[in-house]
Image (cartoon, rainbow, N blue to C red; front, top):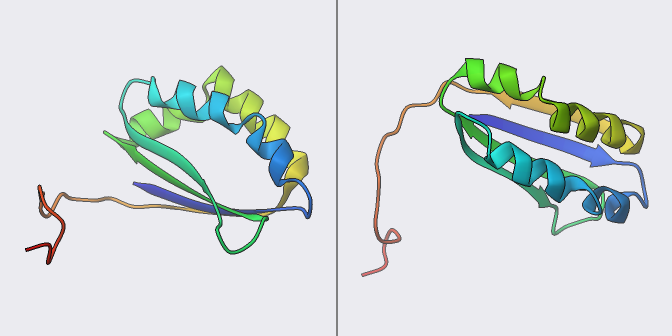
Length: 103
C-alpha cells in the first residue's frame, strides 16, 4: 500500500487535473494493481492525496517505469511544490459488507 501527499504550486491544480486521469486509468490497467486514486484536497487547491494498492512491491516497482507514469511524472514535476510518499506492507484484517454501526 502506498500513500502519497503532494502540494502543487499555487494556481496549478486545474493544469494537473487536465492530465491526471490518463495516468489513473492506465495505472488501473497494470498487472498487479488493486487500487489507484488521486484525491484533490477539499480544504485547499494545492494539496493532492494518492492512494495505491499493489499485489507486490515488484508490481509497484514496475509501475514507476511504465511509459505512461514516466510521462505523467515529467508533466507533473514543474507543478510540484513538495512531494512525500510512504510505502507500507499491509495485511487484510477484516472485510465488511455493511458500514460499522449501520444497524
